[in-house]
Length: 87
Image (cartoon, rainbow, N blue to C red; front, side):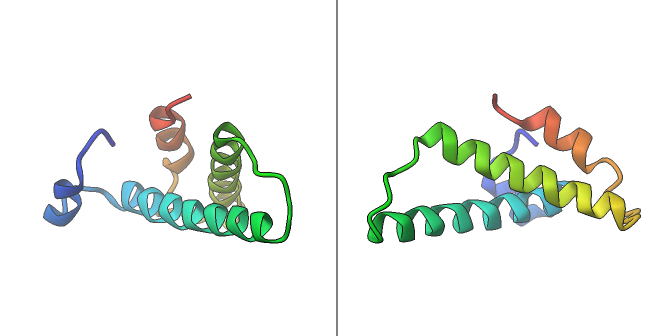
């Protein structure tokens, strides 16, 4: 998945890669929004590393739930996710 945004527009991604891209985007927005709300309500901010761990866990949990539902479209999702993680 070492591609730039122009590849997304060209349609050069398989279904699993697109699923991961979309879900990581969704998980990132959700995590940032949750962090923002916490700050507004007086909660201490989390470190960037903690936010990244949260996003990673959300993605892994989603992939695991797909595997439990026997979703055949994304059988390689966990393998792909582990191959592109940056930590």
